[in-house]
Image (cartoon, rainbow, N blue to C red; front, side, top):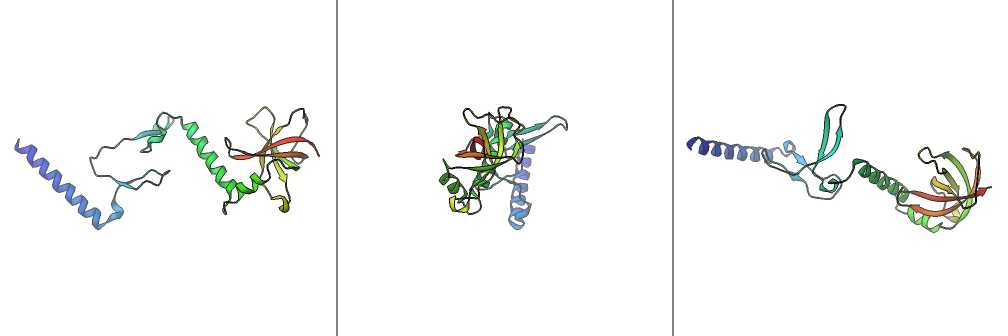
Length: 186
């Protein structure tokens, strides 16, 4: 019984010493923070228990990554990665001044010329990356967007550099990209 009391006292003294050293040298603190929120930082003490969630598993190296962010619970890493990519693209569309999305939304319904930049490798249903050629007077220039074929439009042999007519549909929020419809050749 005496040993347990002594151990408890020693543990308390050690914790007090650690707290005192952390006050004197704050850079030595263990810092855990949710990187995707504005939550206040948590400082952990030795022996403290916290809830963690497995964020990723790397079978080849036998490693895994954990987080304290409970929002990933029950979600697939692939879905989380996709959401972050979409969020990043939307930030790029908004631009540094935040006016990019407004420019795009003002151009919805506008028909203009465009230049094919590339065919999407991920989609086999006919998607192309197209640069809409919108004048500054009409809200341009606009970024490259993802274009799909309009009803009744069949463009065999469409290649990078070809000029076409497109309609600006808005923003595909599921992809975080400018949405366009191909109307036909120029």
